[in-house]
Length: 398
Ligand code: PLP
Image (tube, rainbow, N blue to C red; front, side, top):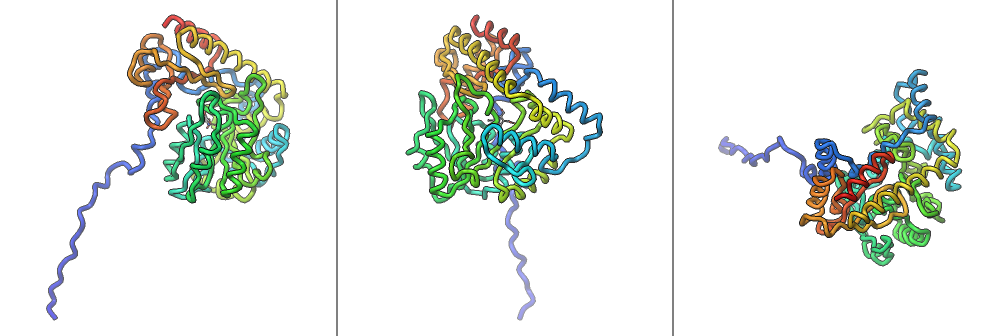
């Protein structure tokens, strides 16, 4: 035998120093770009859902006190006992649904982290998740970032109604979950009981999770009721309720949210929350707990009434400016038809409007599959009255 050895051919290596295949496909650039441009020109930002309304005094005082009292170290990764208990009591008070604060309530770094860890714990790459359109960009992008597949089901106008046949048609053997946002960003849609029953029936028939984002649960107008989907018969064990305090207490920068769900799913979600976020900020958990413990039901009713008045103000100004606002029954955004504004695309229309008025909005295309939403702009009304009034005046003069 000869001793000659042919060296194996080494395949040419792809360059290693570069972004992942996924990275360029999950940027949410338009809202950020509008915000940056708006700051540059000193405009009024109705693009981003940053509510700059005042923090309730009890919430703020309790957070400051907690800092002084030394609550500045890690809490349990699923939150301190005081806040878990307060959340369990809130769910019981508001919806009559009972969660064990030890095993079925997790405090998260905002609803955003809640959805992220739910998706990490419950979905495999390639799993399909039904998402209703118009959608909130973080929902779709969080799923994509975890290599799950969002399957869009269009809600239909007027009123963004659910077409149960379209939902049924979207379910395949790869389906794992239905994600629903009620009240919804950007449409303000509130799912009716009949619609939720249709969702529940399909979820049970196909053994799917239902992941709900209920962050706008108190932002409900015209007497419309928010129904927590987990309360429907048979739904508690398969519903992952995601919500938080960013909006209700005007603390978007605090990063305190929660998940309530059946005890079977919690340890895995808590594990991923620990790995990525460790815990929600310790003193701020106390601030939020004080809000839950001390603010009376009237606080939440006033909140809805205040925001309904803001909605009216902005809707009137949009009408006067020649746009056609689609009046939202919930949340704090208005989608408005802006066909007549100059610009070939919604992004151009938003930029032209900002150049003329200094008011930033978001192109409707941010909330739809490619090619849809070009006629729409989204405006946020979570603003202090004086600033909102100034924005309305500028829009009227446009
Ligand atoms: N879910 C929806 C539907 C939202 O619109 C937003 C913020 O705009 C969030 C979640 C973010 O919530 P959090 O600040 O609790 O992460």
